Length: 177
Image (cartoon, rainbow, N blue to C red; front, side, top):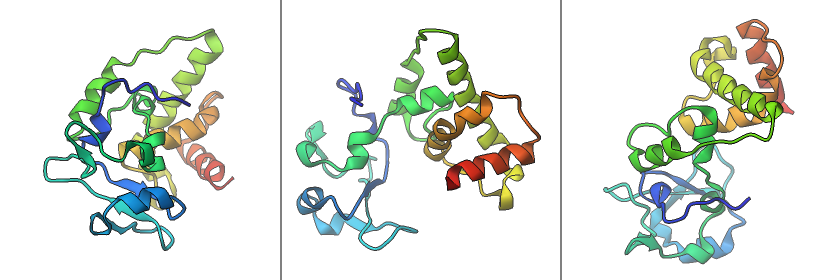
């Protein structure tokens, strides 16, 4: 899907680590190796591109991405609307992204779409507020992980809710599928 960023560069300037996968050879060829570190808890070859002291991606120069045509898949796929859809902000220090998130408005073709959006917000709230209901308290805690998971499991929240433990178990089962 085309992400309508316009002139927004919030994700380029908000202290985000960028995941670069081993199959992204064109991207890896243009990022200086000194700027990459091995991605924790990922298989060998997965790397992270950090950010400068001011929070900007080191590939963001003169107000633009210096490797735009070969930018990582993570950058191509990033969509701050996930936070707006989940009803959460992007987290501390993400001021530009949070301003953009607050500006997004959603329209619905019908009641089914409105209910689906309500379910995404309910899923995000559950994941954020019911951490203790998950086995070992192992629910995501970062806003991006909460938003992505809420988008993946929202259908569970279209139905009448079960107990928090049963709902958490259903989310874990959905993740494993």
